[in-house]
Length: 97
Image (cartoon, rainbow, N blue to C red; front, top):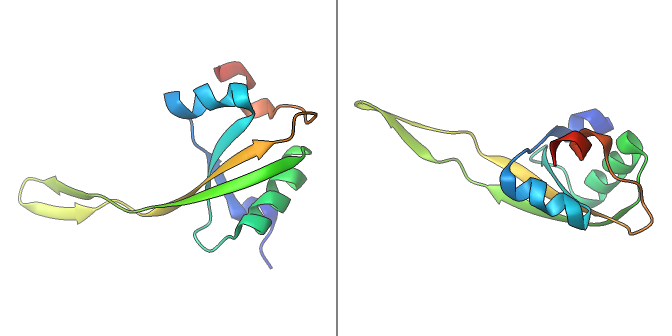
């Protein structure tokens, strides 16, 4: 049984994700095998908020070169979590906007 902290890996902090905070949308890197319902329950448990919807994206790894050596970056799963209108904001993102 996975805990909520196993499902939510880390928040994704980019210009695009920070501009979505105004619309109560938060972006997280999540476990590759986590489903939308698991992600919703984990966010509600960790941050004590109400989740309206969860959208997930499987991000494929990119091919990278370092001279003659070819490698690949790791693939991961990204979740865009939308909170309800009456829900409080998530504290992690507050000072970054």
